Length: 233
Image 1 (cartoon, one colour):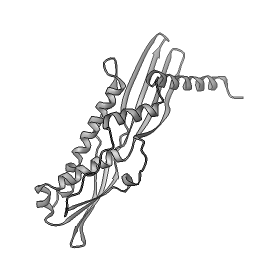
Image 2 (cartoon, rainbow, N blue to C red; image 1 turned 135 degrees about the vertical axis):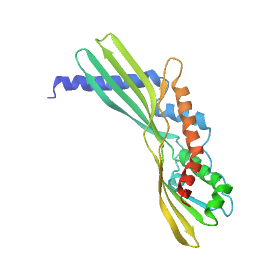
Image 3 (cartoon, rainbow, N blue to C red; image 1 turned 30 degrees about the vertical axis):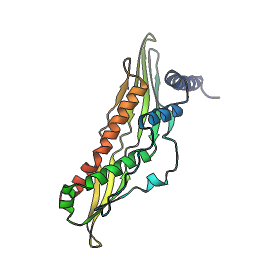
Image 4 (cartoon, rainbow, N blue to C red; image 1 turned 30 degrees about the horizontal axis):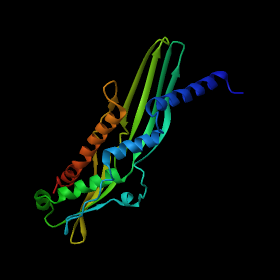
């Protein structure tokens, strides 16, 4: 037989986790809620723009094209921490959200090709070809609920969106007349910050702010990556 204390903690875990989603997602499941929220922000998946003929850049994004899912997100819930003492209670639950890879990868590819059209890039490459393979990219965040109670009378609740601390990593090669003259990797830190939900900001508003910041990062990412690659050219 399992100890009684273990059973009580397990029950409290489930009740606290259930409470989080009842309060936030009263009209639908967490996964459906986030799928609708992301669809509302984008409307449709960001489309890949046509590549300029004779572009000096080739971007490899195989995962985006193999992903045929029409869902905007996938996700799962978890209880991260529970601490129950006589006069103190701390709980932390989260629902982890992963965006469909078409959303970040198509925006990233468009940003790379757009910057590759510039005279600055043409002057650096001087007829060479730049091949970029996207290896890693930020695509996930979590919706968090933290609850702290003292003496069973004073309770503090906190809701927020938090990025999963995933950096961008690309590998690259510069080809000249069929021969590789330079190769390496470039890593860019994800600058997306935590977005809180409070009295004057709903979950939908925080999600829209988070995704707007996320999009802005990807739209400027092409320049950051290519400038790092060509810095020594």
